[in-house]
Image (cartoon, rainbow, N blue to C red):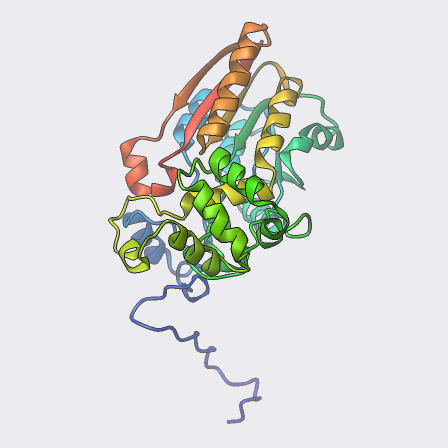
Length: 347
């Protein structure tokens, strides 16, 4: 039978991979198709890993408890991501409620919109940064909402895709932009930033004790890929790559702080968070509640201070946190380890 014969009933063969188990994102065809292979997804989660192309919402039960969604309510999810938090909240405001989502990542936004619609949970999804939340509400014909949620962590879908350049796990272009249609990539940022600017970013946003050494090595040989960046980080820290690979599970990766700091710099995460905290009272109706999940001490500190100032000024009537994940959640989803939840109620 000719290769071009369309009557060939045989399905196309999957791509071959080295070894007994797929390692690269695109090779994990079972995890990427949970509808066909649900048991594979269950096995991956039972091992404490996140299936490729998905994201497990962090502190979900705690978020629902502090936000208290009720039928008829209006939700604004400032970081829609995979839609896990939004789906749980949207289910609880039906009937009569509304759910609005914002996400800077246009590529994941379309997938999430389709996924939620298939669940019967149509969410008005807007592409953009959460710093523009007031404009999003105006576009929806709203002035205030009942619930605001912001999850400041990077999503597993972004971390797992090598072409996005967020992780050291697989070699790929050093991009790190939440929105690849705007701004400069991490590689471009590293070429243009001075050594002092890079050192300051690594100290402030990565809290890296080796910031000066790492900045000097990177500026001497600006990397273009995640693999090159990883090599330079280990070189600056005088670490053997083989020993790093053999480290115990649960031990932090020595490149994590540098990758985190660069991602925060490229996406202007701290300035955007500060703007959200300034406009947050204007987004909430009296009695409305806001919850913010942070994964970095600098972010958590800014949320804590903003909520404390708001309570002192009578803007917020109540609040709480920080709420960490339970040991059981960390065991099931190690990426939740550094999460902290804080919330406030509009006076």
